[in-house]
Amino acid sequence: MAASQSALDLLKTRRSVKPIEMDGPGPSAAEIDTILTIASRVPDHGKLAPWRFIVFEGDARRSAGEKLAVVFKANNPQATDDQVAFERNRLARAPLVIAVVSRAAPHAKIPEWEQQMSAGAAAMNLVIAANAMGYATAWLTEWYAYDRKVLDALGLAPHERMAGFVHIGKPQKPPVDRERPQLASIVTRAG
Image (tube, rainbow, N blue to C red):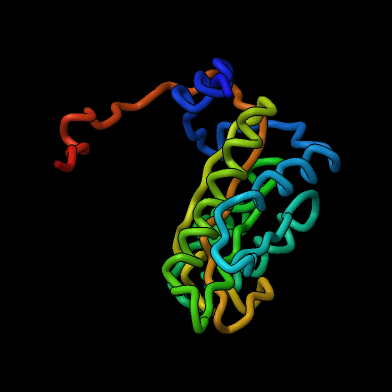
């Protein structure tokens, strides 16, 4: 099978865009279904689907932001109103946010590490699918991805963890690339 040059170009030039630098419109319902279908086509030893997705669009972004603000304020009672407002708006900066939840759990044959990597692959496929449709993305994990009170408020089960929040929108301007590692510093050849 010949490699698609457009796919290679996308992979060679993919770049994250800050959510604050995204505008709408976000993906349509059909595009979201396509993105999630592609996100779920990843290596999955044992066919466990050790991940799931939470879609935050429209008012759901602000509702989830209220939950973040409540936890942030409880964790930081000295926080200013501006700091609380900043946290409240975390998921409202991009038109769409899709959370990737790792459901990795002990299994007789499949190590949890493999399940966690599958969740990471699902998040990366989600990013690439959205980018291929012309959307900008940012896969983020910040304090709220690790705070158990936030995870509980968002409906995660006790064993579930947040692989990340993928923010999706239209870039306000073309993203500027950053320096990438030279292959010589990250590649060794066996033998």
